[in-house]
Length: 106
Image 1 (tube, rainbow, N blue to C red):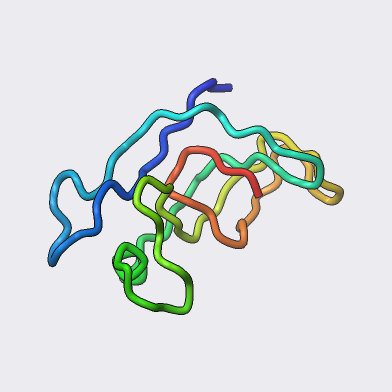
Image 2 (image 1 turned 60 degrees about the vertical axis):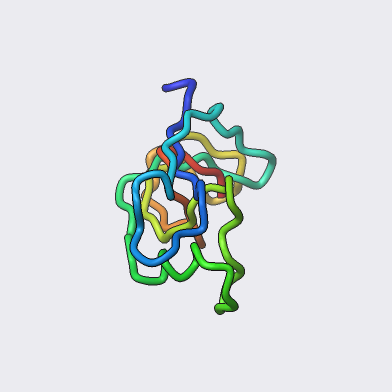
């Protein structure tokens, strides 16, 4: 398994249309699941209009994504390792809210 994790972060609050530099692809350490968590490899990522809303500082049904934070998004993935009852390696899961990354913990 890879030791690094590619993560899209919000680099700037966009003004109008997205422009190069508003998002940044970073390499971060691989997350490690704590007790009760699973490590999920992203297979599919949903890109929706609400992703743009979360980039704003405006009120929404969820707080805005912080500058420097991983972009959030709905995803489907495969369990790579599990420290949670009821989840086994290879299970296909929909984390409650994933992120724009190769791997996330849930």
